[in-house]
Image (cartoon, rainbow, N blue to C red; front, side, top):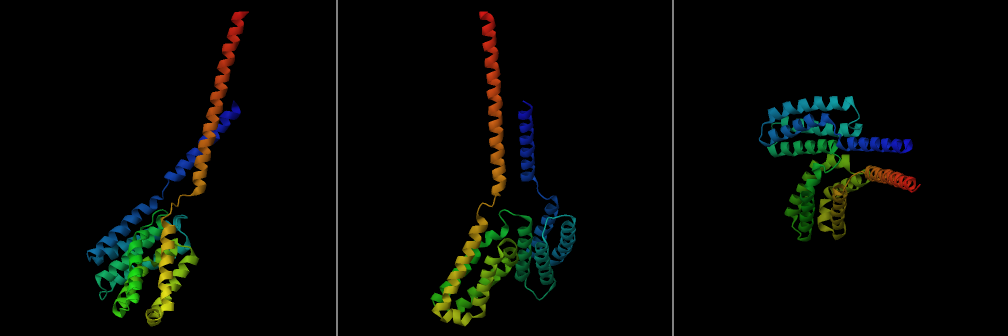
Length: 265
């Protein structure tokens, strides 16, 4: 019986730790995320001064949080910091249009979301936009519309620029480098891509690479090992309780049997 109690105790401890691991979330991220959201909203309504003040607060809070624990890797800190600096430089530059400021702020916001959320990152919501831009670029080539080709490719590159830090954070280095190299080639050799049917295949390849990235990101990214622990824990509890119930049933049965024997005597 002591062994059974020991097993049950261990199971309860494991189950409790599993539940705590699932429920836990870094509290430091909550306030910082609110600041990032508000700064983006200020830029959207062309209130750059307020956005700049909030970004300075964000910088202090983010670096403090990074210094206090293991919330972020050094690569993540560097990528978010660069995106933050780009956003600050853009909103401080009066020659930059508000749309340019919004784009840079969105890039920064998505980058921070990528490091603070492992599941369903915001950048995956831009799947439709970037794939549509690739398809429109390919259509312009097919129609041999040079003006549309330049416009659509520029749009594609603009969207990719917004996604760049987030992809660098969440996508495997190999897949990220493939997409990055493909886009740089298409941009650098625009005339050849537009006129040569052989190089036009690079746009098709790029579309496939982007689809793979978004498909992978949108898969259920729950930790299989964690679910194994939960399932295994549940099985252990079920088997233990079943065993305890069986022992209890046998004990009752033996008691009844003993009483009958005593009556017969």
